[in-house]
Length: 77
Image (cartoon, rainbow, N blue to C red):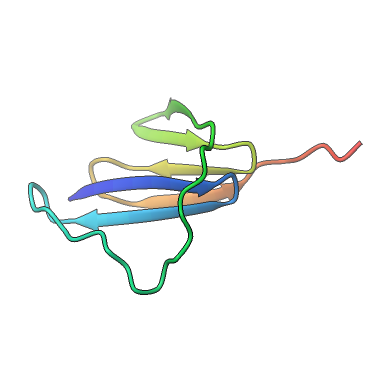
């Protein structure tokens, strides 16, 4: 399974999941927002790959295609 994660903003993430080595038409009739330039950091957590904006973290298991989302703490002071 191929997993593609695209940040549209610091708080909006779009995920594409397709069978391995298959292309897909990424056109959506629902999503009308254009992706913003969003700084994203990459890392590893065990066997998983992490992608983080300042507001959300996405954790992807490349073996299973499993995805976990978490909200990052924000200092309001």
